[in-house]
Length: 105
Image 1: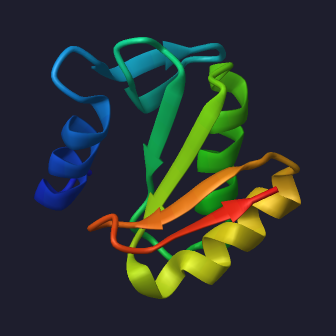
Image 2: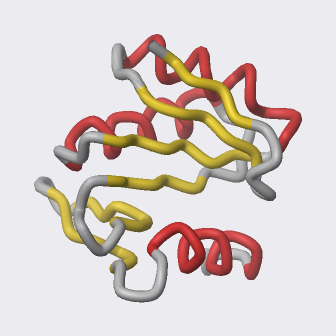
């Protein structure tokens, strides 16, 4: 299934002007966006499925970036925070527009 327009726009915005999207990871996986200085990794997950959110958190963990951002719709912020705690990583959960964010420590 192809990615939605909002997903494509969000990952391009997260990568920035000189950043990259669809960055290869081990085991034939791909990270949505990596900033130009390779310090911020971003995953966009629009579904409210806990398993998919945990998979996105694992991709963030394996990216090796210092800053990890999981971007979800506003009504899935609590579920995304729980997914990051389940995987055991720290990072930021933010909504699609970027107006709300929550640090998970």
